Image (cartoon, rainbow, N blue to C red; front, side, top):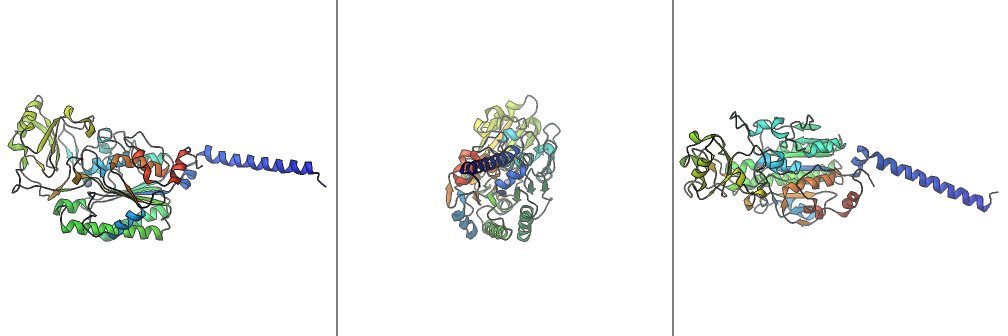
Length: 441
Ligand SMILES: [Zn+2]
């Protein structure tokens, strides 16, 4: 028969063994910092970009699914694109958290101002030398920390960074249709399969609309409103697919865009900007990026910079002309070598034409990111987001630190601020993040 003392000793010993065992278990999870443990601790993340979705496009058309998301998720009043309001520069700011002068993707067109070569936008999507300038996009950083990532048509997702490719990527073909609703749904099915069946952690999905319709028909048209309704149905389809795939409680979703769109002012109403009327481009310049909306760059011939500048500075009342060194710091573009010696920015709605008005677009972008028509759309929902939360406007550069928080990824150096988006998240994730990000506790 055991004495009381012996019984107490056995109990104490057992408790100590238990606590030691617990300690060993705790250490093995924390110190091990295995990717597997992190994958289980954080929810998955889907970033969807609808190209050219202006912040207010849901306000003049019936959008039941987006309206539902206002109640069931987060809406930002609008968000600010980077200063060059173009597709590739803005998408790369979102995925790197860097300003354009730090990531170097300064235009949709890949160019060489020495040889004069230009690569059109869709062809740049496979050219690493255009994108890989030292700023690591989130796909690669997340992969280096043990997560699986994929890109479905997202600009910059189809190239190598320091020799590393995104685990899985699809690049948009030249001329592939942008508004085929059946295809849009198939793309969602594919992405749901990646998450549910192949355990991907982070996927970016890109749609070319409503940018195309905004350019071809104009932003204030019935055709644009119809595309917004198509996007709304697609979001409804996404939520149904998430539910059917068992992802509703495990997948956070951010819906955003890259810039807005504005109606282009035409000659009947205004005096259009045609640079050839003011400066002899052939004689004074050796390269230019003009005829791409409201933003342009010029490379003067040797010794001709002042002549070009003087000729254009007060040429047109709706044209701003900067020498590279005069570009305001808060544009965050002037430090990069790819920014040419003279930069042009037109007032909202005025396209910058070189010699003739070739641009037949009814809508365009590329204008100042301070213009409301250039502001971007932002919504988010999922297990880590609050419901019925209206966020104040913020810079799109801050989407990156938000995505890192959601995934438990230690961010690269970036220009964003988690403070901009922190209030959107429920407390559980924030408590988790106060711990070592490599530790599940
Ligand atoms: Zn775009």
